[in-house]
Every structure is written in structure tokens, then in C-alpha cells.
Image (cartoon, rainbow, N blue to C red):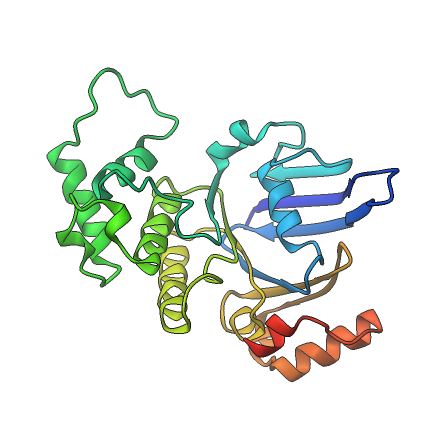
Length: 267
């Protein structure tokens, strides 16, 4: 396997030198091999989403290096990094265009970064491809290609966003609490779809979650963050054996503190 993501000692401080100074990332090191699916857990302000945003280039890091597929992207803008990444956000309304149809949304994702010429029309072959992709979701959306996305439920929109984010088989798929705004039953379905898409396309993925059970149940590796640092890194058989109690105990052992995220404990 080859390294798909390498983060070397990155640091990010917000509002430096002010009363509101916040060390968001404090020397984060992380390597993801091709095909790994890593879940990221931690309390509020631990640095989970900040790490994903650093990888995506939402803002520059203060120091350290970020490599995607062996290429140093540390100084690349968010726009220029987009060619390597697929992203799904917490808000189901973020990843799709409400007033456009399902097939139009998928066509935009499929043609991103490609020369489009003057023709916009969706071809018969493209339409059949989208229909087939949607059929794998088992949500009946393959028969609603011309429906406006704004008429769909949050779970349906998030499932479509997952397809759109993976349609070009990105080097790295970033899932930032992408089920947090959904009800438990819908969230479970979206997570099932996430597993399916990642596995079938052999994608490398990072999923931020507050839900300890989800962090344990999904992916082949789990990392826990605290105060801008990675404090736990568990993979393989060790991860499969984990329970929420084990995770809490290991957090307290490594950090010297009780895990103080009610959202994670109650999920």
C-alpha cells in the first residue's frame, strides 16, 4: 500500500496574541495508507474538524506539512486541493443545489474540473450511469432523476451528496459529522451507504464523529483527539474488540481527564 495522506507536525493557532488565542492543532502527526477508513473522535474543541479543514485547505496551517497522494499540498489553496478530495458536511443542505434536479447535481459533480464546452445536456449514457449508481442506495431515487433535490429528505440528500463526493473517486474522502443532523434511523442508513461507497470504490476516508459507538463500528482504524493532539490511535483487531467503556478508560488513562462530551456519551 502507498501513503494517501501524511500530516507532519501541523500546528494552527486562531487569534494569536489576543485574549481569545486558541491552539487548535498542536503538532498533529497522522498517516493514512491507501484504502484506510479512519474514524476521528474527541470532545468539543479537540481538533477533529479543524484537522479535516486543514487537510482541505480551508485556511493555511501555521507550521508543518500536508501531503496527499505523495504531493505536498501545504501551500495549495482550498480550490486547488479540491481535485484530490471529496467532502460531505454535517448539514445535508450544503452538498447539493436545491433548485436543480438529482441528475443535474450528479452531472455537476461528475464534470467538476473537466472541460465542458458549450453543451450542458446530460447524455443518455450519463443518465443511465446515474440511475445505476442511485439504485445501489436502495432509496428509490433511481426513478426520480428529474426531481428537484429540494423536495428530498435530509437523509436522501446526504446519500446523494455521498455519491457526488465519490463519483470521481477522490484520493481522500472527508466526512465531517455527516450524520449528526439526521435522526438515528436515517443516520444508520447513511452510515451503511458510506461504508458501501468507501469499500466498493476502495477509497481512503476520514470520518469525524461525536458518536463513540459509530466510531468503533465503522472504519478499520480509530483515532481520538484532545486539545489539538492525537492521543489514541487504534487499528485492526484491537479496534474490533473496543467497547465504549474501553474507549473512555483509555482516554482517561492517556489524557488524565474524564471524557467530558455529553453528546458523545449519550449518542
